Length: 562
Image (cartoon, rainbow, N blue to C red; front, side):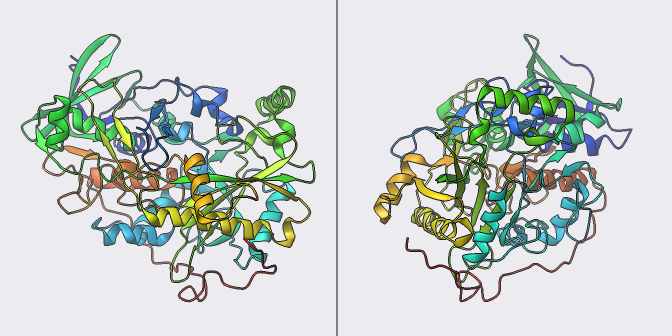
């Protein structure tokens, strides 16, 4: 038994847990313990931005979760990576910094997450961030998390993609994290001076210099220790022994959208039927734990390239070695970027107030994990619907913390999601078919010129859809009976226990999840401390002209038959 008593115990040193550890220990009188099952993040594979596919596909840094056979994907199992290392998924992700649309957070509030509208969240986005372009009404200029634009779209394909989006009738946006998300433009990434800016680097490492923070790695949390309906500590495995440690204030679960519901369930908090089936004693019947699971998913639309300007020529061992050596010495070059330097957000139809389709453009044609690049030169667009309607679950199999839970997303369960992918394919083809891409565009590799009808596109999507690695929602925030936590992130019916990570998101934000998870933890830290919240920000949110009646602001330069 660990006899030291802490004020707070944080489970998980990931995107949210590192933020909490830093902010809570700003008070020198507060003792904080962080338990993390993973180990050190001191690896070139993690710290070099372009190498992100490597830690994402190792058992050392990744939980390597896998779904059950997905019924609407012809029974395929889908890889669901989650960070198992200091920094969590912020140490193994693709480093993309996208906040989501302002109205995503207003949507949360409309669904019962009181006080989580955009006006409430924007100040915490700003507090977290240090943008390389400087702060303004929308962006932060002095926060711990550094964001940059990588190599500033030096590859000519990036500019051609953005120009093609404009020629297709859409707009250019100066900053998709600022006034106007909709449109085509540069993407931002969590990189500082050429090095990954994970929450471990930005938040945890500075906090570890404080004497009131204790971090224990290789610690598997078994369960929350309850005294009646109050959390009073945790039990965890470390060094071959099981320990119990107690806290005087709160246990804060930041184990992520898979780990957090799994921990609650093996602690006896969750749907009674699920717990009984797994042989776990029910301590608190809470129906929503593990439900409402959702994820972004995507397909790759690939083209051969006429000119030798793509990254496919840099995939050989010698080129990779030279890129790595330059990064080790100078922290710049192709090793200092995630290569997702341009993208776009569009609405799939008229009458949508804000975008529901996202594009990541990559000047290479390969798999997301870095394997199997095409022969010759190519480029690709990664795209998918950003507001999925299909829902799945996370359910415990047994009380054994080392046994992965049952995970299923039910990708493509809803017709809205299937139609969303059809639109993604057709709208992408329209964009790539514009004059700006004529110099580079050759034949379509995937889906290929013979995939055109709804049925053909649906088959391609079923066979090729992959997770975008943005699971959330499995401990939903709200004030109704299916909510797991209330708007203060307190587990409903249990005192002294909160969940603080992307599992509490009611719905998917319109973008990647790392930025809103960090924002959530920044705001949650103030809720936990009981201090005054940052003043609301009342800023103008940009909307496309004629969004009520038009899918895009203007007619395309070239009508492309798709």
